Structures are given as structure tokens and as C-alpha cells.
Image (cartoon, rainbow, N blue to C red; front, side, top):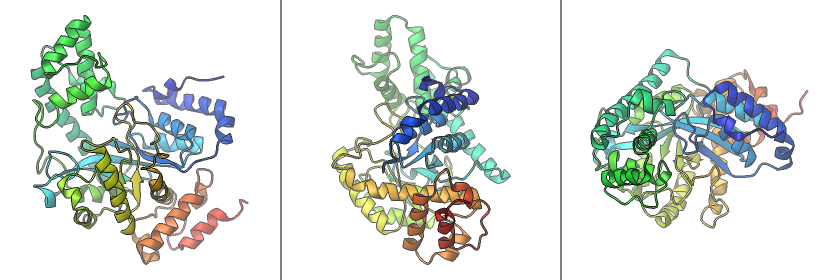
Length: 442
């Protein structure tokens, strides 16, 4: 019996969990007949942040299983709400998994320069990856709650400004926006969706709806996927929320936590601070070695890229050229590469076109980085030791040695044998850990 995959995207956790168990059981034979490949995506957004298809953590794990990803990971904005569900779903489906969080930070050293957020000097998208669990410590929970609170407050203020512009189409944040999310973590993209839905309800005549958006957005929407398709949502966001629009307010010092502050949280919560790279075209990314040095001085130990060349506000061809250069650089610096396409726009898949001429040579770098992050996640979860911290500083003399160990551990560890590492003594040497996973099960 086949079960509809749409059940995996229910806002009810019990329904998702039950559906995944049934779907996997019904297709386990087909899954196991196809070997795991070498492709990865460890930057999947779920509906706890924003996923253009409405995918839940369970759905992300299932799709990773179907596509036989070597490693899969989720990263949501300002929350770790999907972490437990995703790791459990990945364990059930036999997928090597990790989880993280993305947020925005202020970098004082670049107060007057764009980093990876076009038009916003000093502001950067930033990631923590490989969290072993949702933090329980009071000070870490407080930091997470504050991230979410300030994010939602910015959205409420943005909604008020956009309401004035789009009137008579106005949305109520509590009643129109938050219901589009499973846990009250709305994003700008949810706001766009809410405005599209409200406009369609107010203008039931399609011609009047088209005229409303044509007038308000000051462009032709003929050919747009009215009433709430990708092109329309993108235009709403561009004309009402992004730089130069009526709802936009230039961010600056104090609006976001500093990169160093966020890195301290990430490390204390067991994750790995990760610098995000856009496309190598903005001023700061053209001086990538200097930028990486500043980031590493604040605690960064990994480097994130979005492989899809089309995912850039600038020149896709130039981005691909820059991507090859920056990966060669960061690999030589010993930084694991976090790669994946977010799926926060239609057209972005769970797997990039790694067979393409441009991306195929980069697959080994992506796989290596994903294995390192996965291995860190496993060790941190099972034994409270990992890529960062006193144990790693003690047992590894250099980055090459450390990366080799974690890559090897990422190769041989799996959801089936991870628990062998539970409760390891903190004085155990790397070779001893590898031997625990390679000996025959008793």
C-alpha cells in the first residue's frame, strides 16, 4: 500500500511521524536496492523556517533517502525546532544526518562594506552546523529565544509598513501570517504568501486582482502565476520588503548580534560556526582571505556555499568561476565545506545538478565536508566531544590530521552503529574511536 507523501508535511508531528514510518516500510525494499551515492545537501530549509514546497523535517529526510544522499542536513532561520524530528527521521530511513541554524549577524570589521547580503554593509548571513541536540542550558535557551523574538519583532514592524502601502490589502500578523508556520517562526517569504492570499480573497475577479498587483508593484504581472505563485511572491518581496522598497529599513549596529556573539552560542551548544559565501562578487568576498581571517578570529571553523550557479543576485557564470577558486582556497586552509541549496524558492531541488561540467569536479569537496560535519554531530551527540573543544585541541596536532580523522569517521559511522560511541571516555584517542566502529558487532 502506498501512502501519500503530502502527509509528511502536516503541521501535526504525530501525523508526520506515523506517515513516515508507513511510507518507509512500504518502500524499504526499493530504497535498499539502490546504493547510497556521493551527493549531499546539508543546507535544506524546512517549514520551521521557510521551504518553498512546505517540506517538513520528516519530508526532507524521506527525500534524502529517496535520492540516496550520502549526507543530508537541515538549516532553518533562527530556530532549531526541526532538529530532533529530522535526526529521528534520518535514523529511521538510514540517512547520515546533521542539523543547523542560519541567522543574520553584524560584523564590526565590515561596518562599511557589503559581505554576503547585497546592499547591507556590515550584515552577514551566518550558520551554525552540526548541533547534537536542542540546547537545554538556560543561557543558551535564552539566546535562542531572543533570536526568534527579535526576528519576529522586525517582521511585525515590516508588516505595519507594508500594510500602509498595500492597503486595502492588509494582513494581521497573528491571524494571517503565523498560521502559515508550524511553530510561529515567520519569515519575509511567509509575509509575501500572506499578502498574496489576502489579495486573492479580496479580489475574486482575476482581472481586478491583476490590476491591483500591477498598480501596487508598478510592473506588469501578466504571465505571473497568479494568485500566489513564485514570480508574484518574489516581486512582492522585491517591491515591498527589500532594499529600496517602502517596507525596508537599513539595518545597522545593534539590530543583529555580532558574529562573535553568535559563534560563542554555536560553540557552547555543540555546533560549528560557519561563514556563508554568496558568489564572490561583492567587495568583501573579492578579498576572501581577509574575510575568512576575520571570521576565523571570531570562531568560524567551516565554510558554507550554495553550489547552484543560478542561486546568485549577480552573474551565474562568474559565480561558478569564483566557486571553484574559493573552494580550492578554503580546502587548503583546512575548513570543511558545508554545501547545499536551500529550497526556499521553487525550482531548487533536494539535489543539485552535480553531473554538470561545472559542479562535478567539486563533488569530492562537498562530500568530504559533509562527512566531517556528520562525524562531528555524531561524536558530539554520543560522547560530548567533537571537531571543536579541549579533546580536539589535545589529540590533533594540525587541521589536516583532524580533517582526515573526521572524514574517515564520517565514512564508517552510520545510523546503525552510532550508538557504539555512546559514553566514550574523553581521553580516548582517534584511532581507538575508529576501531570501535570497525570491529565486528558482538
